[in-house]
Image (cartoon, rainbow, N blue to C red; front, side):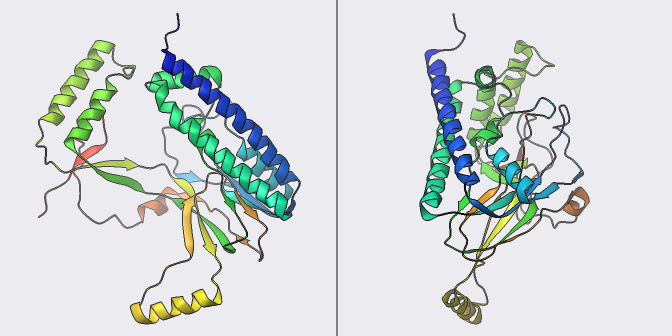
Length: 330
């Protein structure tokens, strides 16, 4: 008799169907891109931590850079690179920031955009179904029994295609380093701790010890006044980012100049986003300047100014979660 219930088994079948469909769409996308004329191709391969090294944040990250035909091949590989290789940790995703600039007829360009939209929709459908597989252990076991060495985040992350309009001026790359901070209530924290009771205990505890610790931490949090201001503080993994800058028309430049004269401010024609997979730039009317991702150095990070606003205490309210009380205002 299966250890999984009917909903879990049905869900994994639905996920399998969508991954199979995604593989077909991506194969067609790669085929379409290979039929295009390649105007530019530049990518950087970010080194991945080896197994057992994923919990140590590196002091320095030196990307390996490629251009031309090799960059194009690596970009296409990155679009379907969803599995671990046995040497590197599957807890850390592979990252290949960069861009390929391709030229093709209008029919082919439309097809490429359609395939990207189809692929992203299938990725979203997989992502939506994963929570239905059960707790963290069930999710891992069900996914990996059907898709050995699957790196889920690599599977579900979106592709980005940049059409001819708006006209892209440049793509510049940098490292994103920040701490995610959001407000949470005492009630929300209690619900999260209660849900953790369903997870497998840490290696250092048996089930009884784990449940005792959950109960103890839950009582500790419940003893706090309901009005206690709390912040969830999570240090995000350093990641490559891309600034997508578009060309301004003459009318836009004039409007921007007028706003500056009146208000001493204007909007930058730039979009910032994570750069895990290569961008696909279709039929640009002007040359696109593609920058290079530099070296990440933790010492440079420490020089950054600290975030302003309300401060939190140094100690979390529970060792189970990175949630901190807000310090009272002076």
